[in-house]
Length: 377
Image (cartoon, rainbow, N blue to C red; front, side):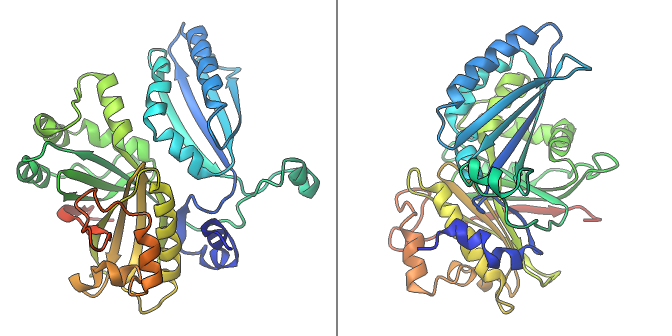
């Protein structure tokens, strides 16, 4: 049987690479690079915290190895690299509550961090070295992106406060889209379903710089403060640790994006929410990614762009469709008129979660709160 990863990494994936800007599902090895800036005088504390963390990470499924390096020019700068069998096990770990608790000892000695994730495309050593390393797979072909980084945040608000929160989130002045000479905000789309909020962000340039830029803007800070009383998870934006933990838990990474080879300036944006069965979020996202790859090959299909966001059992699919509201029907956008595909998807859905219709166990269309593009996006 051909797996979803094989479908995404075989000849079809190579043919589609001109339009796929991001995917974690090609089955190849992952290299994670963490740049760390340690407080002066805290180097020994950091090293001890790392050694404790390293021992814990060694038992995480999918972890292969890691390495800690210290700058020869600036002792406060450190580099942690780790290798993983593929991206999904790393993402399952780094987005878990276990990880949130595991890295807490580092917070007191670290001034700043920056995480970068890469699929391994080529390496020295040739076939013999590849065989010696257990035949671990490399990314089959380079992908072509569009220069846009996609990320999302999700959180829940107290039941009964949904209308108030939606009004607050819809009514704010957009921040300056220019972050610096190389980074700009492209688009922010905000959706709700029940008491769940999803904010999707598109950035051209440095995502971390853009998120920090937005957080400093008075108009954005006022909105964040206004919704604080309604959040199910308490946070204090004046407390760096409280803010860090909240946004770590709220992160909803993009795990797959595909853009069809056709454009439509009048395309409409929709978000579909897929509450997964416990422990099945990544597998559900992988199935959706494979279906989106196939749908992008259909010149008559309504979906022009699709981004899949996933964390734990929360899966959200952001789509740009042509043809008006009817084209955003899940049966059309996913090809679910095919009973076999509909049944396959339903196996991963949780009919008791997120307000999904129990009879269909299908995705739920989220309500649009606001969708804002930068003027020169």
